[in-house]
Amino acid sequence: MAPPILLTGVTGGLGAAILHTLLHAHALPPSTLIATSRSESNRSHFASQDLHFRLADYARPETLLTAFEGIGDLLFMSSSERDNAKRLVEHRNVVEAARAKGVGRVWYVSLALGGFGNGSRAAVMQAHIATEEMLKSSGLDFITLRAGSYSEAFPLFLNWYPSSTTILLPNLMPSVAEGKAAWTSRDELGEGIAALLAKGLAAYPPIIPQTDRNIILLTGPVAEPPSALVEAINRGRGTDIRIELQEPEAWVQAQAKHDEGGKGVAWFQSRLVWLQGLAEGDCEVVDPALEVLLGRRPATGPQAVERLVRAEAGYTWHQNHVGPRK
Image (cartoon, rainbow, N blue to C red; front, side, top):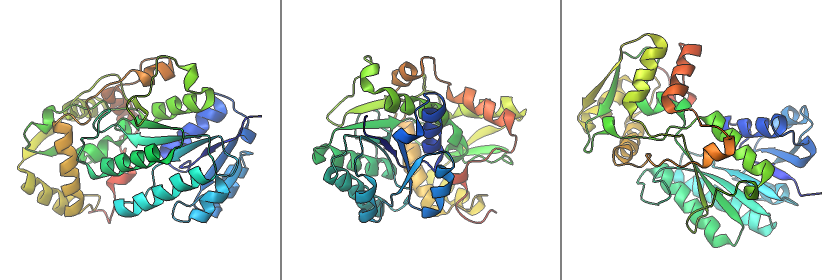
């Protein structure tokens, strides 16, 4: 009998989608999977699905050493820690525990900023690149799954709320309004990653990991600008939202002052770096790997966005609210 697959991050949206697909689409026996959480309080939730549960707190290496005992495949989801220095300490704990326990293969879920390269200046991507480097140096068998920007997170990328009448973007060169991203459905990412875990990479000969970081790029089928998402919102809600540009520093200050989600100046300064990357092509690389895994063409960003706002006019994204709402 093959060693079990251990899943981290299954209390989050992508991890939950992966677990659901493994159980229901691929019909993997619950006994072949181990769900984890940093909180013991989640044990009963997974036990009710007949799943094995292990405590795995990235900040407590001793829990990782216990959790990774006898594991074949490890799905390594990034820490939710916002501070990148702390995040990298936690990621180091995971890599060292996986090496100490002889984990068969690590599947690390990274981001697709910069495509297959390492040129993105976004802080979150720098943390992913550093983690990929840890894995490369560890001697572990690993695959890096660089996931495209979630279509479902469009409120975060546009700073859109159901009450929005205008989308404000910084006036950058090149133009951010014309920058393109291969927006990718989170649910379809979950479906694709589950297929790899269930069947193994050998089941998909067209997919060949690239670079010394063993990168598989999982993206939507086409790269489109923010304006395409705004048009999708308008179609889905019957609105007439327009994009307006502001000088970068004025944009940061105005957004922080009036943001419904309570995000501050530092948050928008960080977002400015991400948007500059979008304008410069950080998110535009498209790869067919996800289509191969799904066996169909993935949804485009506008298709996903229109569907979401038609289904729920008050649609929000949790990360767009980090403080008291204004």
